[in-house]
Length: 487
Image (cartoon, rainbow, N blue to C red; front, side, top):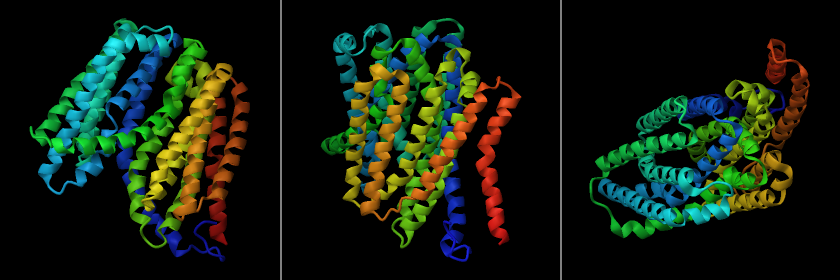
């Protein structure tokens, strides 16, 4: 048993875990507050989307959101990820202001050029890459929305590197709430898909101007032109990793719009958004987990402490994934409507991919213990993304949306396996195989039992039965601990 000696008594390490978990939990909850709001508003948007959009329209929304995402990623040039390093290597506050403004100018200039270029070649690219959807007018607004997000990324990064968590979270939460309200008002007036895309662009544009104003209030009007080369070097070095993670998340949307109907693509989009809520939670907790690990891994005995914490975190993630999987049909009906009930298998598989991704977040900080080893992280991400793309190309036309969800699990598994092997081989990480295997077996058994209840008509009996299955591990753990304490 983790943290017990041969006599069953708590070890000093086990005693030390209680305050560590408390401090880590407080930090995680602080960072997770924004994500909780984001999950709630995303849930509200799913309900609004599925109320006013058919599954076919949701397929078009998915394509537009995918174009916005890749446009924002490419136009940012990876500079926001390089911002912390470049910001803190400047010894003076004036230098930090100048390098920040230089970043903002580079991103704004490249975004403007890229958007103008896409105005010319956008129709040609659309005809080649996206069949059945013209560049005018939906994809034009999606592209400019991505440009606004790219320009906003530097001010948002500035708030974070200056530890202005309250300002950053407040502005982002305000933007999400405003977007939900505007989208609801627009769709309730029957303006349709085009009105929705325009409304999203206008909200992004307004907040982009606000963010840039706050950035200029800090930086002033002087930049550091000599730093442009260094900024591009650091930023572009981050771009392959960002593209790899994008490919593992959204590349299948491009292929699915050719391989399946827009109806099925809409179902896949809704299922992925519901199941992806777990991924948003894990990524927000990582904001507290990563710096905590950086602090502890330099201490003697730190790798063992962090490894044991990961051994406890794995079953927690699997339990959260189990809860989402067990109640997948009910979540689809509650958050969307019965028209989208076919999305529930996608919720199950996406939740499991998010579980593996969450474990990756737990393990990846180990790589930063070794300055040479951390360079392998982009390589692992690119390999996992390449496997994802190859499997998408080979299998999506046959397996459809279920195949896409399974491929996501496989690529996340490759990512986790690669990072875990490198961390164990070079960084002193001890992978908790017993905890992982027990969690997988427990998930499979309990999920199988829960599927037997899907034949029961939807009602209180079915919900209570699933709650009993979900709470069984907690009850069993409680009595097991009580039995051990009584010895």
